[in-house]
Length: 238
Image (cartoon, rainbow, N blue to C red; front, top):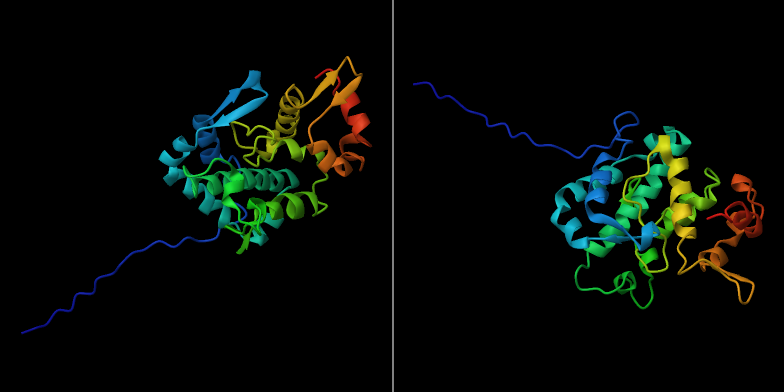
């Protein structure tokens, strides 16, 4: 009598790092989610996020986050400047949504996600390039501090899920249109008269605290801005 041994082979998938050539630079999944769950208010100068909607689409949302986290440094470094910048802006905004969803609906502000000793923006809760990081790392170290991008309009693109923050764009930033997108979000922010307006009676220009916090970024000659005065002068018609 022959004994036949049957070997059962289990097939499983591994989450492999994304290479330089197969990352979706259209950020299609992120764009689809934003278009479904972000709407414009206040004549287009602000946006509203439907967090419950994001929660209902959490499978595709978390797939997108996993895709971001799987990109190795070697792939990122091989990309063009605009591909890198779009990736970082989208990562910042997407992980901000994640931070809210991790605590939703039991919060009234993003600040509720921090602690007595750690602000939400310094809380290490996601992975990029193989290490745990916080939101400030993306904005201040990777974008502002790296010297690669020299982009003052970044301050109108990253959304910190707080009332004082610029609007969350209802589509992903993409390399081939990022300049137009940055100008668009800047225009939307500057036309928000609840934060930026000229007081005729007092002959005073009142602007968002963002310009106080990051004034130096408008003094470095980036995009031809040598000061906040030149920045506002160039966009006075907004």
